[in-house]
Image (tube, rainbow, N blue to C red; front, side, top):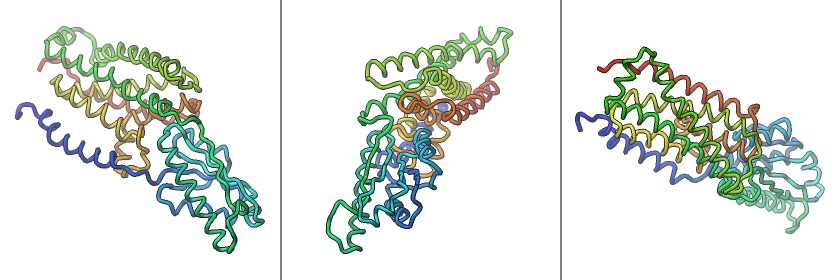
Length: 357
């Protein structure tokens, strides 16, 4: 154990960190769900209605947008899960004792979150209507109250597989990175790395030769997974497949950079396997936003998840599959993946030595 520091650290420190993360995420109650607002009325009545949602810890209302289009774009980018659209005649109809329809647009890419959001929206709106009637000392009626009109976008049927499968692609596409790290470690253990070290190629050429086949394998996986989703699970592919392929290359480069960094730091293939599982599988499953909304997590978990390539690829895959998002909306996530890949690949080249010692 004293000689194998990495395995010992994983069994102690790693286990403690995993316990804390699981305790936070698996017991999470959704709160502070990001909501974007378009207030077309800008009246005291519309502000009072929105305040009713602000006072509910389930929601976290952001600043009002300038148009309905901006509000729906926030859903596509993943910056909000709910959009509240208040019509321009909200106060006029409310004060005249007429029913007024308020539209709520829900992001259906996470069906469980959308279902809980719908329940809270109905409860808050009903409580607001009851408070209005209490103040007016009126009787229960359908007039003079907001009527909730819900529109679920991107997954109208709230099918669980439609949101889950595109997200799971971020998990299974970690396999090429794990394979790259293990292949380098096994060559070192078996002594076959000596033949490569003795060649006149440079360090970056050697590592580029290592990752190129796995990038191609990863792209084949993307095609296969897409076909499985479209034809096996009837998940719509609303976006451009070329956009998905291009951004998948950046995701694979980021993952492969991390995998090579692990392989150039740790020599044991057994330790690499365990650490790869801890880095590539567990965090993306728990804190990347696949099953639990990141907005409901503690700030430090959100900060950690921001540096996971899977966090950004989940937004990309769901965006392309369900939201028809293009590069104009996903370029920031792609840029972050490119930066991660460049940083970790550069670290791998710097740490790799063409020596036997």
